[in-house]
Amino acid sequence: MRVSLIITTYNWKEALALSLKSALHQKELPLEIVVADDGSRSDTGELIRRMGQEAPIPVIHSWQEDKGFRLARSRNRAIAMARGDYIILIDGDIILESHFVQDHCKFAKPGYFVQGTRVLLGKRLSRQILQEQRLIGSFCIRGVKNRKNCLRSNLLSRIFSLRNTRLRGIKTCNFAFWRQDAIAINGFNEEFVGWGREDSEFTARLINHGIRRQNVKFNALAYHLYHPMNDRTRLDANDAILHRTIAERATTCRRGISQYLAE
Image (cartoon, rainbow, N blue to C red; front, side, top):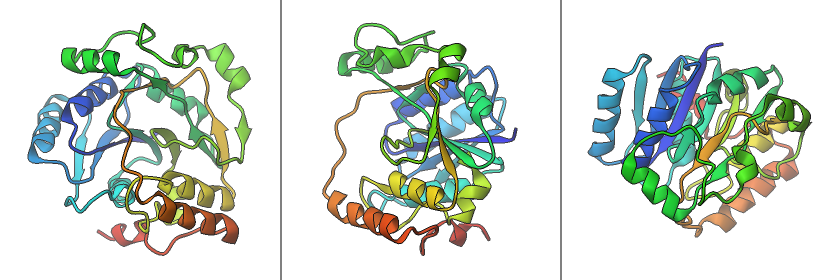
């Protein structure tokens, strides 16, 4: 499979360094890594260039000017730039278990997108991991909130990785889809400004388009570093956009990825 791993980031190069390091230590490497940068300072770009020079695969920096929280636009630009047929999307504060890409590839099927789980690392443990800047075999130690998500088991994954068409629990910090499906629904909706619901609305249009949800449990492990809660002042407005998409059973959006595909 031609897999593009897209990592979103904004001004947290210490977390991004660990995320990139874990991506480059995969048992099965992706075709490329695209960092979708929503306007970080120059030190983030310097980190990406330095790590890219030593990487066995292309590490591409997709940067846009900092004009506030514009994650939808940043992701669209990265997806448009990606050369892979299949997109795995994570956040820049996610550390990947070494079989992460391999596990996602096992669950990739036409007509489906994939929702993975995450392990929530506590504040003290996250601080220690960031200070040491090193990968370990497992973060299932003191300071982990949901230890069951630390377990990687192919048998349990086959039993508990079920399919459905629900929106509940959508989190694009561990998420995968076919690039052609994203293009068919015009990617992420750039009406969303500020944190919240752009991932659910994107997923709603995938489902309305006929793409089903494949949950992945006990595979594709992703460790989420602790960070303070994001600013939610735009949440009510973003909820209204999501509810409109659901009510209208919309399959596309007006301001999406199409504007970047000719670039």
